[in-house]
Image (cartoon, rainbow, N blue to C red; front, side, top):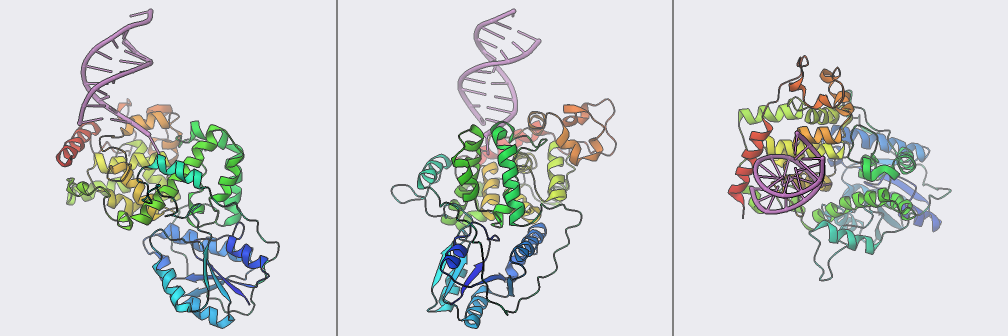
Length: 448
DNA sequence: TGGCGGTTGAC
DNA sequence: TCAACCGCC
């Protein structure tokens, strides 16, 4: 009796408990990907493109045996189950922190066919870690301690041989969205594993010191792979266990932030759309033509603040931004331009290859101050000082802002001080000192 | 996982 | 003069 191995947000073969279980039980599997039209997310070009590329890589790893079916999983999975008279369905991955409604409908549609959910792309499934009284954590640090104590599964090994059901029809993948010149990471599980090995061996030791430096290669850049389950966090976590350095500890804490946000969203799904602290609904935000123009300047990287513009142009060029710079550009939108975090979050989701609802929305709420365990509103990033401190070489700005390539060193962060202002680079659209005071005044008005 | 303005104290 | 520190937003 074959097992249906239903890939959802989990596009890898190594370290795949459902697959390993099925193969260990001598099962033949149907490697199934249900292309739910909802997955094509018209507003997520780079992400959809990357997903399709990862699917092709998965199909290659399976020697072309991946079965793709288009439609609603609640219809497709039972139909395939009937075709092959499957004994079990393994829903790999996508322990969806946004709710399990679809899995539930599939389970009902399958009737008596047993349904087994395994292999969440989160190391510890959202909802599993709670305070002794059973309520979810609202603060990161105690969550981190409990999460560490809870532990996570060890990664299983990829089976040597994978037997699949032959002769099943497979739909063609749709055309990938046009993303222009945007350069995406190499897709697929093999690329993810190589990336991790490279980071672990070359950068982990100095991660604690260098991780805030966007001008040098210092971060793992695993986010897109984690987003699509090309690598499961338990794989790096297992490697980290034998490493005692500060870098390993700090990187584990970064993985835990992802877990924390998934947990918050699991318990409070509305936090994807709304302020976790309701009083922020009363914060005055700008609207109208001038506000729209400022938003466009931010989105297109022409605010006149080099570190902000470099970040927003990196987003267009690579569908990815260094985390430190994500905080800087987010702070700029919310506190210098007085626009709402939701618009910024939507823009990120549209352009990021790693856009994840939990991490993205809560990252924005952290910056905006409206989240749980968020940065206090009065923490306002100074875009010039952030640039000077974290891009001291200026290489990051020069890489993405061609107008400033002729400026040497750290002076690139203060183009207005140059004897001859660089041609074509805008003057600042707002004055930071002034807008900072304005933001603090608006905050005063909603302070509890 | 800020930053500012003010104070202090070592030069 | 300036780094270090503090209280505050």
